[in-house]
Length: 279
Image (cartoon, rainbow, N blue to C red; front, side):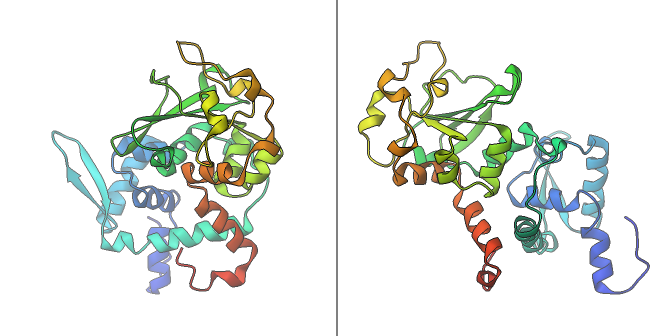
């Protein structure tokens, strides 16, 4: 790591924390990533060689520790010193939400990073007990990247690159850009629905009579694929946003864990509310 050549504690801390990629590695370790492959998914533009080197540097600095899990495999964990960096990373997120909101550059529209981020934050239990499946369709992606699934069972949520083969409980359809803006909090959920930039669908006509916890069909293209699943009833195809109640919006927000993003957006727009914010 490059040195500032100063004894100042700020300079010494910056030598560790401000090295490129370090804040993102700490972000992902704090969010629960433990294995090398998981950390790689959070920094897709960082080469495996550089990531390995940086992890060794952070271990030498006492920021993280490796724990053997059998054979030559290790998991990575923040030490007490590393944990004390986490509030700084969170505050960086608040600053970024307040001051860096702008049009995304082409290289920042990364579908892989988006779905990985959603996998960490999606609340599968919000869909109810038992096994649940959420299908994503990204309308601006080629066939290979267009459909993704989240499988929630046994208290965990797993990202699936292929159809897991179970009945789908909720469908979400949007462009990658719009979904990034929703997850970041730049595009409020109610606005995304009202402007038809996010379509939400449920698997059967029973949804039409369910209370606020249900999902609604907002687009015929959000429906199930073949493979023996029930098709969306035709009477739901033309339902538009004026039929979606606030409870449904809240349900989708809960599943996607958008409350934090939207709260961060409100804090960013009202700096005075940051006092005692606890981010």
